Image (cartoon, rainbow, N blue to C red; front, side):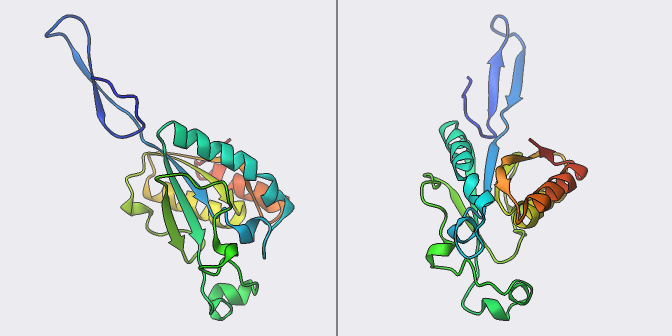
Amino acid sequence: MEKNLCDNRIVNKRKGRPGGVIRLYKIMRKTLIVVDMQNDFIDGALGTSEAASIVENVKKKIKEYSENGGEVIFTRDTHYDDYLETNEGKYLPVPHCIEGTKGWEIREGLEVENATYINKNSFGYTGWGDFDLEDVELVGLCTDICVVSNALLIKAIYPEINVTVDSSCCAGVTPERHRAALDTMRSCQVNVI
């Protein structure tokens, strides 16, 4: 019995005649993590032209995973009305991604059915260990803050899995910081394509 799904089911294949060799194959579940593709990071409070320029690439990547049975997880940078009183707010005094606002929402046209949403209050989500990740690709914003934080957390929790970042689907605060973050991830055995 064979199923062409991106999940962790075991596939049985019989070789030869009845009573022959049975081989088991594990199909790796592929997960796309879409980091903080929110309005405030694209063309809102902290938007950049580089961020706006990756939206169509990210949309194609999400569609590819969705149509091929992959798992899609969206993270949302999530702050509250007291943002300026937080540690981050003291270093970056620009209110952004305030829960329930237009700036907090995922960019229109990117969301797909059956996606998982994670609201995170810091750069990196510390709950990745609660997932059964097997093969991960990350895309999104900002390469040098939240993408690198999540990629390195996942690689630390799951050192034996493939972790990939698609550089054409990411943008940093500046092009120089984008490149520096990609170099950092390469140094930590994250595949950068």
